[in-house]
Length: 64
Image (cartoon, rainbow, N blue to C red):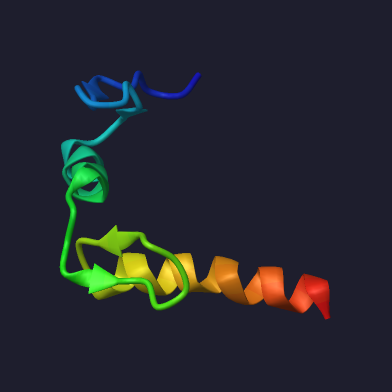
């Protein structure tokens, strides 16, 4: 049996086993200074933007 997920996000309800995971998750709810050049979304850090951009690349590859 896996350990309980005691740390819950107050904004979306997602839960985590470790407090650090919740801290990282909460950053996803922040509007940041890293805009996507392909859509109106903005991200709190470059890592989050990079992950989002991978989705745009996959969409383009699917269409080709």
